[in-house]
Length: 190
Image (cartoon, rainbow, N blue to C red; front, side, top):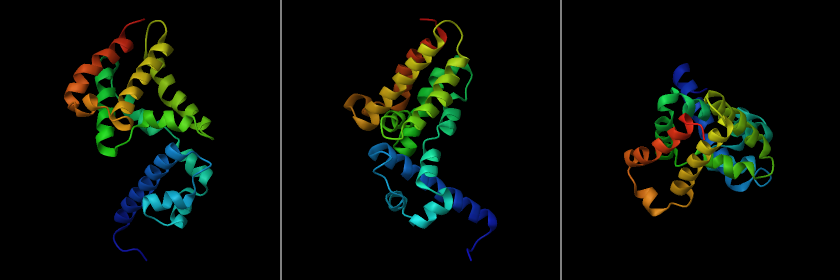
């Protein structure tokens, strides 16, 4: 019987579930669906494979949860349009610092893998389409895709390529340099 209050047990369960999801996202992004086992994910999360099954059921169900983009999209889009460029950059850079990951870069790597179509569809509907729907003026979809592509490039440069200048630049400077470019696509028709 677990010790601690029910609230402590819930917090522990939520933390364990999130650890497993992070491990699954990393593993599916780098290896692809076919090459990943529940044991791999369990080892990465430092839990048993039985616990992964308890929380998520099957590998397919875990992939469906790991490929969901809704939570990340909510955080990225949680700002009024006049300040959204800065918010997008700042939120993404904060995500880099906290997790050493990037949901947009994950979209690039995961969507090209076997079974990556679901992730691509989630990314499209949960981020790109929602962003495009908020924009006014012509070519909103193109502008939304340009914003996402710029943010993907920033994440890839920092976390995958680890380019020297971008990686060394302080967060506030990257925000100051990048946010106005993104805000222009959000505000102005092409």
